[in-house]
Length: 220
Image 1 (tube, rainbow, N blue to C red):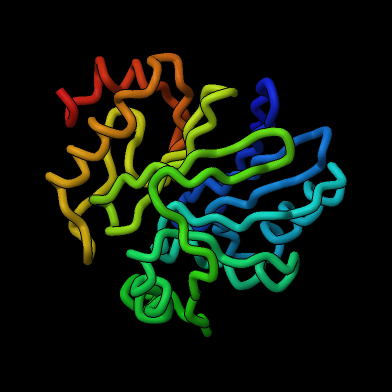
Image 2 (image 1 turned 45 degrees about the vertical axis):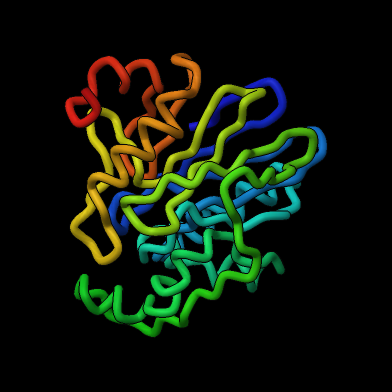
C-alpha cells in the first residue's frame, strides 16, 4: 500500500513474523526516506525493502522505532548496517533493545540476535525532517515505556506503532506496560488530533482518529 499525500508518501509492508507493519515514509522529490519499525525476518522481506528503496531511488536518512519490542526492531541492525543510519527511539525503551535476545527466546524464536542500541534519543515534541516533510514525535507510553507516535500534520497522518489499533489498543501485559497510562496517553496525545487524521498502526488495518474516538470500545 502506498499513500500519496501533499509532501510525503507512505509505503506499507506487511511482514510474516507477528504480522508486523513496516513503513517507509519518503519524499518523492527530495528522495529522502525513513524506515520505521523494520520487521523483516526472511530473505524475501529484506529483498522487498531493498528493491523498493532502489526502484524509487531513495536515500535512507532515518531508522525510527516506535518502540523496541522485538517484532518492531528485529531488523534494526540490518538497516543500520545496510544504509549507515543510527537507531532512533525513545530512551525509555533502551532496556528492551538491550534484551532483544531474551525477547526472542520468550517467544520461542531461535537465532542470534544482537542488542539494539539507541544512538539518537527521541523525545516528545522532536521534529524529524524527511526531505520537504516532517514528522513530530509524540510520546505515547503504556504499551512500552518509550512508545512514540509519528505525526505528519501537513499530510494528515500518524504512525502509531502498537499504541492504537482499529477498534483496539496495544496490549499492556508485557514488561513495562501500563493500561491506565496508555489510555491517558491516547486520549491526551492522539484523540486531540483532527478527526480525519489517518492512523497507521503497527499491525492490522489503517483507521482514523475520528473513527476511533467514536467507536473504539477501549476509549469511550
